[in-house]
Image 1 (cartoon, rainbow, N blue to C red):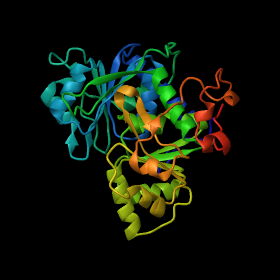
Image 2 (image 1 turned 45 degrees about the vertical axis):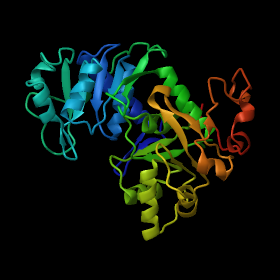
Image 3 (image 1 turned 60 degrees about the horizontal axis):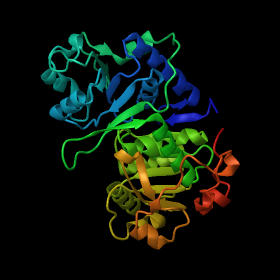
Image 4 (image 1 turned 180 degrees about the vertical axis):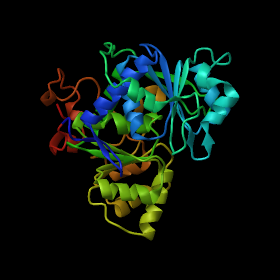
Length: 374
């Protein structure tokens, strides 16, 4: 398993061993920079492979990750940094039309040397993750310095599964965004429940452009695949043609979408039909679905199953979901039912209780497609 793909892009693929090694290197760099257990490390990072390595690195040192919406403007960024008590920040220099360094200049002049200064006294250090060919601003810490500083990984502290792993911010639809504290144990149980309930096969591959700062892409994407030795195929931004190309080129089993994405992918397939032989599953969830779209997913994308559901950050991602053996009417008119996969699993997996075995979807229970990696 160490040498099987874990993060797949068009340019390269990182194995599980690669991700482990890079995250250990970054973790050692974080410790060399002064990050300690309990510190809050904010990150403004799109779906680059180093989002994965950095997330795991923060956990390795016992710190708490604060992934920030990379579409936040200056004042929104400042609010989250202050409200989350961020001690360190790793940020892209630019993304699309956003200039994060200019935002920092306005929020905390002199951040290159002084961190948050008087305005953000808890923020000790800002590290720049370059997204282009431009050199990192003079005086600022460069992400590559973490890799150099951590070239000789040290021993890392033992991390309590009940400690806070991430503070993930809500969308703030009814007020200011709220930071939700999620523990390591909570996130792993939620991810296991998704992989098990949806019957992931060995080596399951999931592609998505949903941002990993949100629980949808984070839990249903990144955190699910390790249970089956699978891989994520993250995309930095959404493009319907590129999503379909990624499914074909990297033989994705699964794609994570919200209905607005699904609609334009279906438009692309109507305009330029193609077969997607590897695609087994589609999640189209998170918004109200247009009338008839679920039938069109089956007709045009030709998956074996489609899932919809309901979740929220405060409940660690998906709470309700449809099942593979639900009638189509339920899929078209409901968000499914409470996902019943909890700490007790199926007896065949060595669990102490069989109370939920009868509620497992038919495919996971009978087809043999779920073979969780040891």
